[in-house]
Image 1 (cartoon, rainbow, N blue to C red):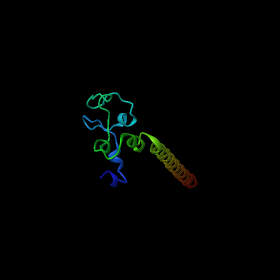
Image 2 (cartoon, rainbow, N blue to C red):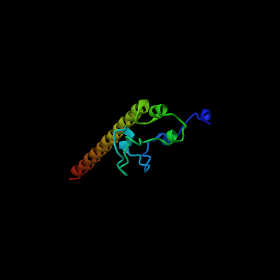
Image 3 (cartoon, rainbow, N blue to C red):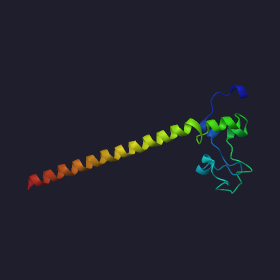
Image 4 (cartoon, rainbow, N blue to C red):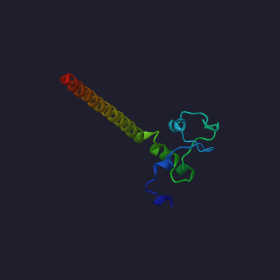
Amino acid sequence: MLGSVTNLDQRLLCRRCVGCGYDGALLRGGLAECCARCGCDLRQRPARSYAEMEGLIGEDAAREASPAFGPNRERQSNDLREALIHRWLAFLFGSMILIFAILCLSNAALSAV
């Protein structure tokens, strides 16, 4: 069974509290000492992914594939950076259209007088 696993869905690699299933940002970074939802001590019972609990992958492979570690984190930061740039470009484009519309309307109003 383990030999036939070639690709896992990212949802299976998301680390969750073993007590309540919380998968918030504190658990993804691995910085929390206790669960924000249930207060489970994460030093005694560390957050684990579904794939780790079922034995589909080892702990080392889970750390490499987890979004909080490795190259996936760099890709996510690049995606966020691109999204931020796209938002700013959309904002600037909308602002330019608004300024152009104001100029056209004020020109029409001044030429009518």
